Image 1 (cartoon, rainbow, N blue to C red):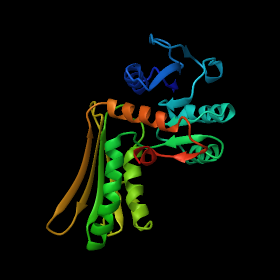
Image 2 (tube, one colour; image 1 turned 180 degrees about the vertical axis):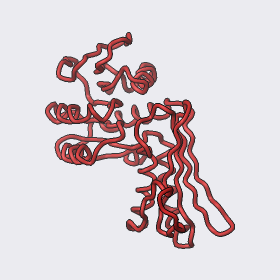
Image 3 (spheres, rainbow, N blue to C red; image 1 turned 120 degrees about the horizontal axis):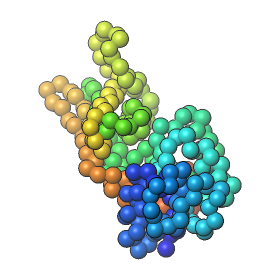
Image 4 (tube, helix red, strand yellow; image 1 turned 90 degrees about the vertical axis):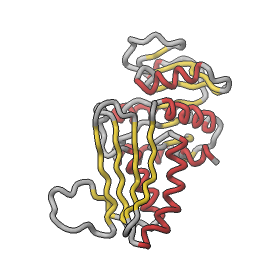
Amino acid sequence: MIKILMHGCNGKMGQVITGLAKDDECAGIVAGVDSYDGIDNYYPVFRNLNDCNVDYDVIIDFSNASAIDGLIDYAVRMGKPVVLCTTGLSEEQLNKVNEAAKHIAVLRSANMSIGINVIMKLLSYAVKHLSPEGFDVEIVEKHHNQKLDAPSGTALALADVMNNEMDGCFEYVFDRSRVRKKRDKKELGISAVRGGNIVGEHDVIFAGTDEVITISHSAHSKAIFAKGAIAAAKYLADKKPGLYDMSDVME
């Protein structure tokens, strides 16, 4: 059985993963780390990573960007692989993650959903055939009113997949309110909606002349991300140092 250290165990996602892992025959959480200790878990919880004295194989992180620097330093020092699910990282933090991947296995994905990662593959095909035919590309993402970062990491990842496929020809546009001009053909618009308890919705719109194609994904619960995180932990536990993503898990 793969033994997991859950970093951010008492957060919303940490608790969803805790519930799913309890019934998983191939992986289980043996310890958690969280500064909030108001939840009774079936495993020991430490307030600090350095206090953990339980043996484990891999770390799953669903915390927040402010905790990532300490986590990466700890994982490299301990030589432990990390499934890094926290979004909204700074450029400096991303560079630190890339450097850490020279020493440990790191799996980082903007979205742990298997469905979203399938859509990424579909978008690579779609943009290659539709953009040269004059289709405009827009992304609209919707999330709950407690989400801090906008646009979502997933929306940016979807944009990056298409931009990489088209050799970086797109310019991301997040706000058109300050400029009065027609849409440039190389724009890739990204819009964010925040409200209620929307778990996560992403629409990628290809708008052409007389036809519109929309590729959509709706998350109805956080369980889809938790399932992906556990699958990633199983995959990463015995991997050599390097930077991995969910497309590796799906191969």
